Length: 178
Image (cartoon, rainbow, N blue to C red):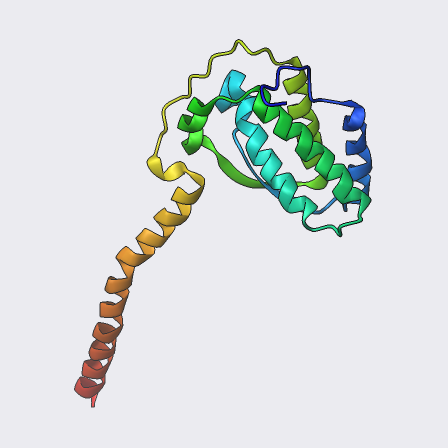
């Protein structure tokens, strides 16, 4: 288990995805962080394993301790964890700026899991990961939020000055008109 080279961690439990798909309302949106295939290229599986695992952990926490949904989700978390050990590439942190935050409705979410697991079962260890350059350092998942906050803080002093200035103009206009 430590080296992850003892065979594929993908098991027949993948069939449990269809029961999970049926047990969770079809309009329920599940949040996930991901990198699209067109950005990640051959590294798509490796880059999406950990965020998918974290998303499944959050989803599992919504169910009770003896829920069959929780048990099924834990099976997929174990599969993804084993895959992480198989494909462990620490240099892939350089893709951080390409992650996107989103939500998928439950059906698409479980189809996405199936795609990742299927692609992982086909994956070979000899792939190279060359990320495209980051367009903007504020494109990271936390970077967009920080950019919004910093732009608010840049405008706040202007708004604080604008309010008393507007009040003075209104008072002057009122006094002049009297």
